[in-house]
Image (cartoon, rainbow, N blue to C red; front, side, top):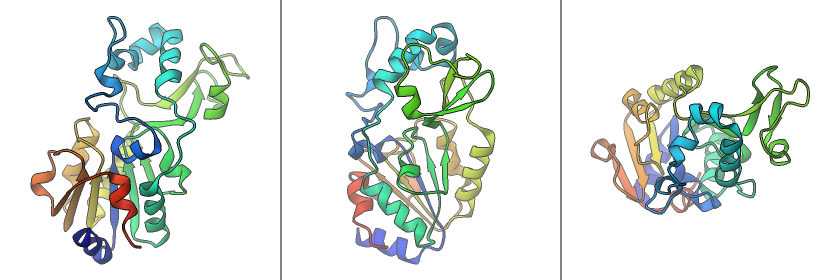
Amino acid sequence: MKNLQELVDRAKRIVFFGGAGVSTASGIPDFRGSDGLYQQKYGDLTPEMMLSASFFYLHPDMFFDFYRAHMLHPEARPNAAHRKLYELERAGKLRGIVTQNIDGLHRAAGNRLVYEIHGSVRENVCMDCGREYDLNWLLRTTGVPRCERCGGVVKPNVVLYGEAPDKYTCMGACREISNCDLLIVAGTSLAVEPAASFLDYFHGRDLVCVNLEDTPADGRATLTIRGDVAAVMGALSV
């Protein structure tokens, strides 16, 4: 922690790159863990199948049943990591958050410089007329949600398997990573592409990896910390 604090203190442009481990302290499970959702099967179907674009279009009723039951956590609140990142942004040191999470907790904590690579469950859009709906609206619906204006299907603004992330979000994330002098990679196994390849754009001075397990980036890191992201980030002074 002493070494991490020194790196944060001397940094001028910090970017935080986070995954599921950032939100576990908020009660949202790490889906890829040994007991996580992605290790389960539902009959002949895997979660990856049920969260694919093809499954959404072919079986929207089954998709939304699964999505509401397993992907939405309206009770979750920002934890110490989210709050500390907000403090760092307010202090002018944090120049961007690149997140693979869809829970929207970084924005809920107050951060504005957020690149949500895989979208957010807090945003839903009618596929026909483009009308937008929030998470509370979706939670009040049953079955396949329909637009109140035109009757079209309302799709969560999340990137499903088989879909490409928004190119402008990705461009912004890569730009911030390429311009920072300290990149903190936390709570991610770096197993999901294309987000994992974003680290190739980092050419700054210090790379920090905070995770419970080894990651592919550890070998090039200035500092590696094996620990809970909320505990580590929450202990920093701004």
